[in-house]
Amino acid sequence: MPRENIVAVIDKGGRGAVLASKYLQSPDVDRIIAIPGNDMMAQGKEKPVETYPMLRTTDVNEIADLCRSRNVALADVSSSKAVRAGLADALRANGVATVGPGMRAGEIEWSKAFAREFGKRHMIPQPEFYIAVGIPPAMRYVDTRAFRPLFIKADGLMGGSGSIGALTIEEARIAIKKLGWTKSPLHKKVVIEEWLTGDGMITGEEFSAFAMSDGRDVQLLGFAQDYNKAESGERGSNTGGMGASTPHSAITPAIEEYTTILFDRAIRCLKKEGRKYNGVLYMGGMLVHKDGELRLYVLEWNARWGEPEAQVVVPGIIDDYFRLNMGVARGEITSHRIANDGKARVAVTAAARGYPEDYSKAIGKEIVGLDRAAKVDGVTIFGAGVKIENGRYYANGGRLFYVVAEDWNTNGARERAYAAMSEIQVEDNNLHFRDDIGMPHMDRILRH
Ligand code: GLY
Image (cartoon, rainbow, N blue to C red; front, top):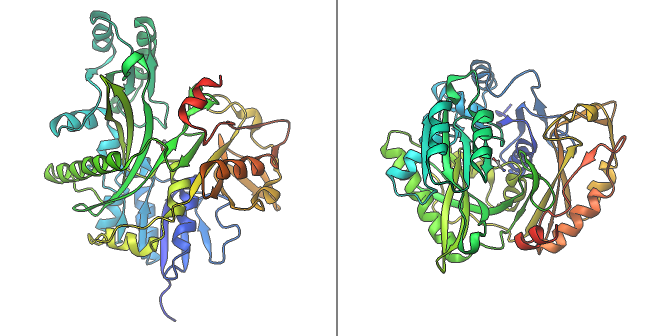
């Protein structure tokens, strides 16, 4: 019997689900093993998808053994915790073809202090910053400077909640206490940054950009808008992501060109520093109008696809995703420009009521209407925190699933996504979602 081509996707949320679906579109892929994966991943697939709920993405030795023993053709390390744990290094050491950066290259995400110092060394445009080691120096820093609004950031991985904006000294002190307190020595640095504003103190517009590299060459994959706040109108707590849309209305060809230059510079300089970067690199950027000109700043780098930006950018890639990534794993990224289908996509995150704070009351509640929602034209649903038992769906996490709609423009995609959302309920009114995903930046701000 000819050997099966198995792809291992090391991830669990909607991002893992969209990557698994994308790999399965390749005629070369026969099976996915998703580690740990989630209950909705195998649904509606013509090829097998196995999940490993007993494993965590950081179980480096177990995952390396599994991939080797199953003769995996390609492993995709797409979770930041797995990158931090050195999973890609271990897989490569075990002879498994792998996409995803090793621990050292991935430090560009898992240490905000490293990322800022790296940016300074290599002239990456970024906010002014100060790195305090421990709480007392951080407090002294905010106490002694002429106060301007700041962002206080924890150094390590914090799942989207590691950055707090402070408009006053008191707010900065509270944020330092919150983020700087930890038992882990990995988190003891606090990064304090200027809060970027443009003319008239107007906050800039954020964007997410994605590129892929084999460690030497870079290919731009696309741009998206991320909707991080829990409530519509950019209000409420930071979350892991309440939605995404593409294209991004503020991105012009000039911005695209400049972004590509910055990706290229980051990849080249990482290599020069002995941190060869293989896989998807994510730039969290901000556009600010200042002194009459448009400026671009890098707010953060992430060593993976965005969640939920992957859900809107990955489906639009026309190239065979398996062949593309095999090339990256071998250090031979394609030299032709990666093609995109040009469609607009909107992803609405369906969260459990209470997310990102206490959503325990929603756990175990039944979700109904997913089948009807998936029948709306142009809509696909990618699962995350959902448990399936006897064919019924139950809430089992903060972010439950993502409703992704496509059309030829963002308004059309938005209408389809919300038509699908209107079909879905979580028992006892336990569904929470934003109603402004895909709306232009100023419209979102001004309507509240
Ligand atoms: N969408 C934000 C993130 O993936 O970090």
